[in-house]
Length: 201
Image (cartoon, rainbow, N blue to C red; front, side, top):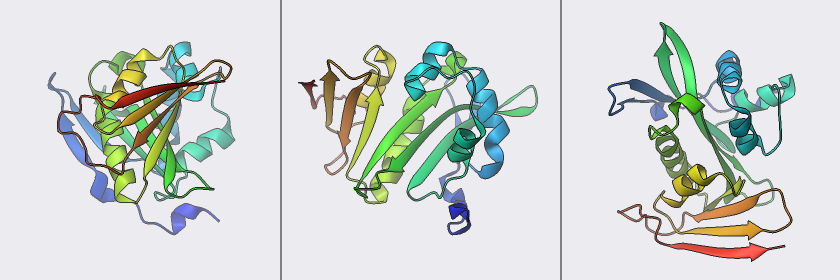
């Protein structure tokens, strides 16, 4: 049975934003009919962006993975999308999601994806900030990000969300790890000043 049957679509998280460029963007939770928009977003990611998001080289999204990305319950798995109009049609330019850890319901994994031609416009930070606040309101104490150490743009983004962050550099694993503590007060400056760094094998 589809878990989305148990939780209604959370329309309260819809928000229209106008970027500094004047471009309107709608932030809204993903719904099951968004499969074609997710496929279009994926098709417009560079090989590097695909690897940074999935930490593996994918040429296409298999049906099972696509279903996982769109058939969500909005509680243990929540995803917010940034959507705009291109040539009169809806296009998805970014997503951010959290997925609660099965063994620890107070922790979640956080991901962000932004289409290459939309990077540098603040979309990633707007998505991540909103999703982090939603996770915090659900009682999530910390979010974890698995990240390629070369992905400096995302490291910078996550370090500026306003909460204390810990960065673990790995010498052997494919990816490094960031953990953001959501239990304290959010820094008004969002400067990312409270970042500690450790190393692990």
